[in-house]
Length: 247
View 1: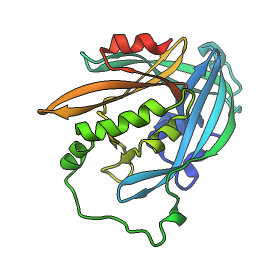
View 2: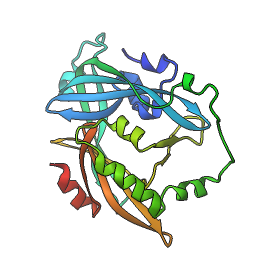
View 3: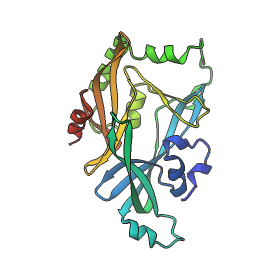
View 4: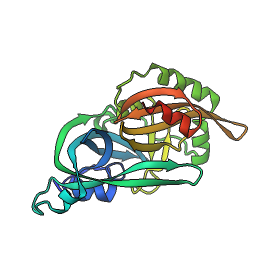
């Protein structure tokens, strides 16, 4: 399985664990329940700099000790490692990572996503008037756009898959360098600065929603994912207060 995914057309490295995800085949870390890890590889295509995700391959593995990893049969290709964010400090603008070792890597499932497929583009009107990125970004975070997002967010059911949520929110995953990185994520009311943290209870990922008023951010809601699925929608507060909702 090592390096196999990176050889396939449409593999999106930055969303699939980058170098480590490629080297060992696990992908990016999505969840942990007990000693079971879940990862994923994303496949899609670019349309005018916007990623259209098409498939997700979910991987599964079992946590082991560093000693067991070092003593493994070097011919075995189902062992590996992944780095996880275990602490985030916004004031210091830093995060601390921990290395997790695993064995028994396998493909758990392949899911087709709901984003526009290439064959659906035939006859469609593409592009439009060019818009400066700064203006486009600000257009998504007006109070009116947030109110639209708020309705969608409040309708989400706990357990809804992460990618289904991004589709429902019309999230635009944008690259400015032909897919080397994806640093611009645009959706109604989405303020950016998402963060992720692995805890004993699972892997959590948080998206902030609100609007810009008088050139200032007004964060209102935090959407919390646990192990790749909707956990809770809560009022936005401090990082510490938001993370109290992990359990």
